[in-house]
Image (tube, rainbow, N blue to C red):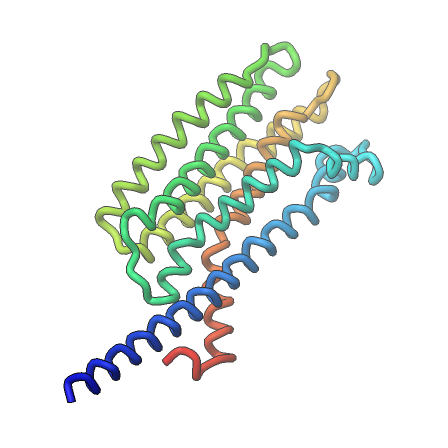
Length: 242
């Protein structure tokens, strides 16, 4: 009798693990779909964004950005960041425990995006003040990003100790959205002013600010879109949740 019970328990445990593995795979697929959608949106907005920000740019000239390796590095970083941000929502949807270690990718991704916003605002303000007369600030931007990344990551770590994982992700998205709006309030007017000035490559650094603000704003909606996909999937497959 004991052997029969043990066999039943082992069979139920194996079935439960198989179910959890299948569910995890399905939610990870949905997360990949959200990241791919984010990538497509950024790629689709690239050329129209260039033509809108630089009115003298033709369509063919704007399309040359797709041949630049730096463009694809930027796109890859944004998509990987989106995937990292979705690691906690994937666990929450699968009713799996979220440890502090599991929070790390989300914290690092959010901290990095806040650092990118700070760098974008710095670039826009720098061109607004110095026009084309300033010196190279590449290392200054890198240093500021590193410092801001560490600072915001520490802030999110502390929040993660006092808040539930779902509340932390929601808080991160709100912070990113507000940060991107504030950054665009700097980048948009400085870009307009820069484009009316007469010097070489006017508006280039302010355009970096525009790109950063819009990219992070779209980035902040990732978890919300993921949960909408999950809710739709559950309605279409009600029998697979029990």
